[in-house]
Length: 258
Length: 258
Image (cartoon, rainbow over all chains, first blue to last red; front, side, top):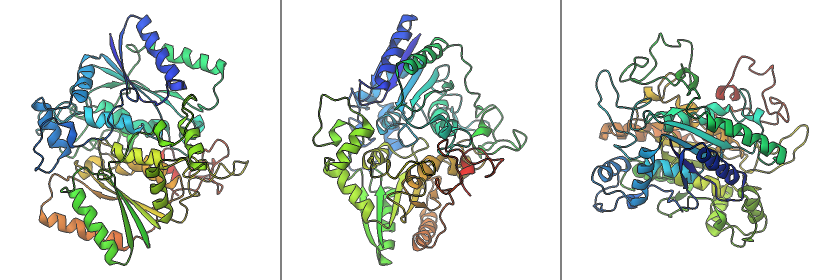
């Protein structure tokens, strides 16, 4: 299978750098083909702006969505964006690996999402009708592909637990796992988390590699998070709220998991 | 009072651009002094990397936290970072204004947080003991200052409601309001949200300005979100989980609001 690893850490000689190398080797040893988008090494342009189209009318106000649509439809995207889209189309599975900075992904990776996820590619696809609200949340360009996060955090695991002060990790990652990965159609596997990264000795590093290796070995067997598909009847259209009889007592992110 | 408006939209002739101009005028007319950090106009460098220190030993592995600490303590930060820190120290209130892109802030603003929030400035301050886990979540460099988000979204309001498919807006914003603003000590006011930005005519724009104006007029009177302070007894230390008798049946983000 084809695996795209999108990796965002500025230092190759870091825990993240080691784990990235480990993952590539493990996947290749299992016979997969791996491409790595090493965003810092590529000097990835993080900010979405008018320069993301090769030919734009500079007198018109810039509209991030409509300009993206126009550039995508007319082959006017910059080469860096088009290349990443090609990798996404090529991939059977996509892994995003990053350190948790301020409770989300690093800016350079957020900018990869914003620029590569063009209108007409990752959103704004499919029909809108009484029964459908576009191909998204379970449908879309990435349908049939799998995705998984590998995330490191300096804090302790209980700080990210159900009653931990930072908020539960599953909720912190919901905007990424549901909003960035499930939205364009990926099946999203549970994340692989590493906590307290300042305290890793050889024994712990070895254990982490064992667990990560097992997760990578099981990439095509692990059950995805059971997010509810948008157009399969659980949501009212166009309000896109859960039908009253679906998980009637639930509110918040957890209600969107079956 | 002094107000810093950190603004992240690439097009001045946009709804965000108009609302930014409106806010500046409203605040100045009320006698406040306003500084705007217009990140796109400033060509803000979004990606945190080794170039954020003016003198670093290039043979040492780059550690985002420790390098930040060293640069902050020794006056080795780049000028763009130091200037934004000065603005934060100067401000009595800070407003972050941005379009919601992929359920979070734009990369350029995330990169402002990552680079300006130095170790020793926005985190890594205060003592660690049996009773305290540093000055954070209610204490810290920004204590006594107020913060507020102004956020635009293309989607409909019910899509961001308690059972809306995108997740409740308060939960989507929790990593920012609690994790980025409350963490270094800000009192965080409820956000000002504008939905369905593709459908704004003059009448609706006028209503939005009325509401926003009232929020800005009340910047020093509005009750902040009652996030629980970390070191006032609600959390066990060092686990940083809520004490069993505090909101005993609650889990997730909402448990951290009194």
